[in-house]
Image (cartoon, rainbow, N blue to C red; front, side, top):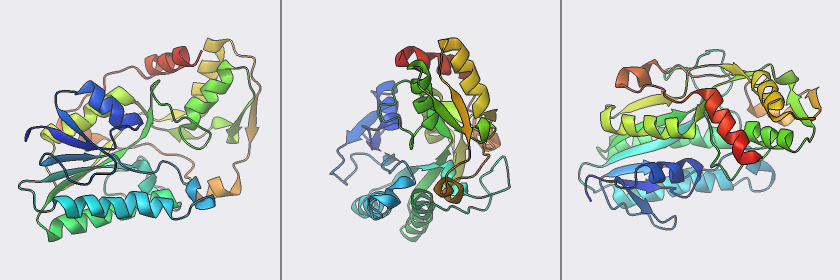
Amino acid sequence: MNNKISVYGSTGFIGSRFCNMYPNDVVSIDREKNNSKTSEILYFISTTTNYNIFNDPFLDIETNLHKLIQVLEANKDKKNLVFNFISSWFVYGKTKDIPAHEDTQCNPKGFYSITKRTAEQLLISYCETHSLKYRIFRLSNVIGETDMGVSKKKNALQYMIKNLAANEAIQLYDGGEHIRDYMYVDDTCEAIMCCIKKAPTGEIINIGSGRPIKIKTIIEYCKNKLNSNSIVESVSPPNFHKIVQIENMYLDIRKLSDIGYTYKNNFWDAIDKIMEKTI
């Protein structure tokens, strides 16, 4: 049991896929529990969008910060504890340093983004104070056919693919000219496992494809592949989106490559899988 990984947030999109891919290496921890069953922790618990500010402005704080400290407090006396924390590219926020590398100055704007960055800083401070080990993984946009929580606010790309399959009109902010870094969920999980096994502790590591792609290019591919009659309209982003979201982003993954991870799945094959699931 000591060689296994205690996974917090094992029922979410990425957490559940990680557990399904590595069933012999993980122990799922119930959401209401704080105590780890092993000395290696993989922590996925998190909100997922910046939009909670409209309905429950305390949710990001409770989920991303308060719960984290509860788990740290419950496990601080474990021998050889290593805390692997799942973060997000959202922590970079409004930056012109593209591709963003791990030393890029963070300037997050939305509540989700701010609390994820705060969680990183609290984790580092806590671990340094109590002589614990940690790693922080900043994920790019993760896509996959197993994501059951797709919406306009979360995983908007797959939400639009779903609309294309239904021949429903979609709106592209600024015509879809902005670039993003998308990574298939299986690749993301393999990269996380590679870092847990090989990466030194005390590190922040970007996990992404490192390959920028225009949203418009993906939508055009899907529209043609689906033979969709959807009307694709270019619109200006709403003001809130402009406040909390950066126009262009992709990640510098040289550190991930140096650790030994090699990106495997073809991006377009992943898009095809998503479309097959959507139809």
